[in-house]
Image (cartoon, rainbow, N blue to C red):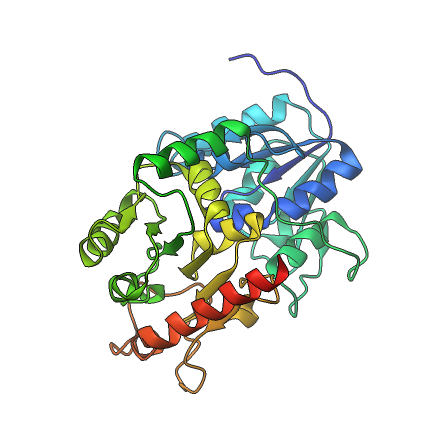
Length: 340
């Protein structure tokens, strides 16, 4: 396959979708320095960046599918090499990403000095600890720390907005509704009472998630028949983002819907169990509410969240009651109304 020769910068971000969303301020900063940049991302995450104003092209790297293993890594590296990039930025601190750009013979390779793959970088920058992840990743652009960080953006199109409107209208949702981010890849980060919350609310409910979240989506629909609707696996990330943008508020686990809502400025209640907001992955809106059981000595227990509670009690989220979450939801909606 023929690839045009390129110059400028490429960003390698093949982590989870939430990580890709949090990288968008870095993309904006790099575009100001280099012009629009290319990005290597997984196919699912790539769809969010296809129309981003800071992105020239998204290169799909199906690391768990067609590009799995060493042969796939070498194929993508060869593609990058033919594009003649002058610099590669590596927010994802992985050996795989670093090896890819080394094989691509990109002369300048910029990443964090605490990365396991730092020996393969040509420029190693300190990773700010006491900062939101957007600010940490943005710092790779080499700009003075403390300067204003660009907003999280996703470049939704009119087609995305229209698709969200069609989906909502087909289910009779025309006014206020609450979005629920009830799923996520890490089992221990899932609050178990979303069906009970949906049954308690007096507004329509839309469940946001991917195909693997379909089970919890169906459970929420069953708890509030006719009022709760699951979009899990029915729409893609772009339409999901446009639906979140229309919501009166979002209640979500520490997972991708939280990060999608950063781009839409949707009022939110974020539920934290094994992780905590101080890790740098929480809401940016000062009116948002983060809930968690702060008094538990076992919390936090993981940087990203385990598949199951290591102590087998999951008290960090099981003790977080429905009434407390409902009260927080009412508060963020009041705050949002006061700002209008």
